[in-house]
Image 1 (tube, helix red, strand yellow):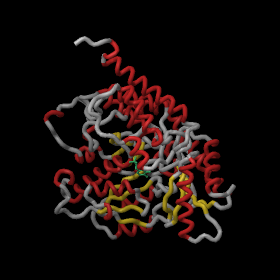
Image 2 (cartoon, helix red, strand yellow):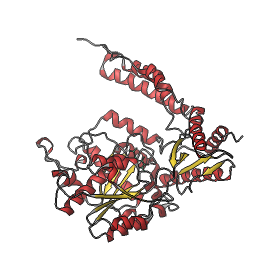
Image 3 (cartoon, protein in one colour):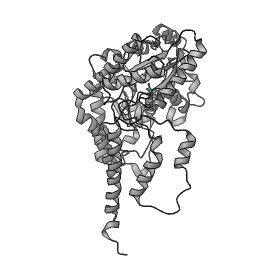
Image 4 (cartoon, protein in one colour):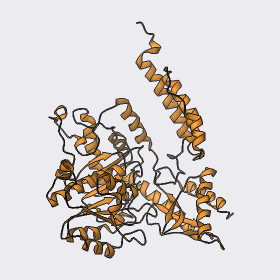
Length: 474
Ligand SMILES: *Cc1c(COP(=O)(O)O)cnc(C)c1O
């Protein structure tokens, strides 16, 4: 069949990616002015997007246009400078371009054989990240889809180690019929780590938690918990607790690990807190992390690469490999490093390219400046909260998260909680800035997280204005 030049695959692709480029460019250009969220209802989004499976095809460029128009009210300006919700980063120019190229070249980054370029790039990125955070160069690791999967990788290695201590192969033979493996952490253990413990057969609810009054685990209380456990134990440390950004004393956790008679493994969740190590001003917070056995972190938070991206490091390469040891004739005989032997997935996205481009474009210097700028913005906001009557800082803000609430004379506890929950929603609806809520020590509170490479002090002032308006403090 004869096809005109316009309908060759190359021409169709060119039109489609040209359209994606145009849509992306106008979205990115609109970020500084755009409402951060329209807070559409599920009904509104269903009405905009639900339809039966198309019976026939459409032009790819037209498909993109249609999706963007129909979905637009549900697109959050989270890569923009005034999204302070959860702990989200934005995407840097280099990371975005790298991610686009990764889609275009469509490498399978699971095996060396399927993409030597992807596997080698990932090795380099992992080495750069260890260097950036002061972790030992010889540690093993891999990129993951985020900190949850990075926690899973670290905890799988921990489970393998504990099985070895007890005389069995945990990933090979399973946990049934063997003595239980104990897990201890603080009350501030992140829900994602608990999710991993459930996935791994430890049980989400089996983790023993020591008190963490200011967000940082009470070392004496943890030591007491450990004293009640005779066998091998997994300690989950928190380097950056998600509500207020406080850190466990990691060196003290490493000491407890060393002293535990039955042996212990220290896993540290450093989803955003690991980045404290990029600046001499904040490196004391994560001091001791280099003594951990495994460390989990996120790239789509403070590295500011696109979703989804994270990374895990494990001190003992042999244990990590054993945890994922499988064989299949069709993947044997690799000449180089096979990432899939270090993570749960087999085929996987070439996430390392966005991270490589981001790290190369900013350098060590650029990331240090980014982290310092974010923490300075957080400090400016925290100072403003403290100085503003009608607002209360819920905890000190050592890094990039500020937790606060609105207080009003004469309001009881329940009414204060209701007021703060309503305020979070009102700020989101206002759209100038985006914040999320939490519970801190039983009180409804509001969080602002500062991770975005583009956020300026001017954006912090806009956030302050939005809070002031909603809190009725004008
Ligand atoms: C965000 C976060 C996680 C989960 O990370 P994902 O990338 O969302 O999977 C885990 N721990 C902490 C402390 C976090 O802030």
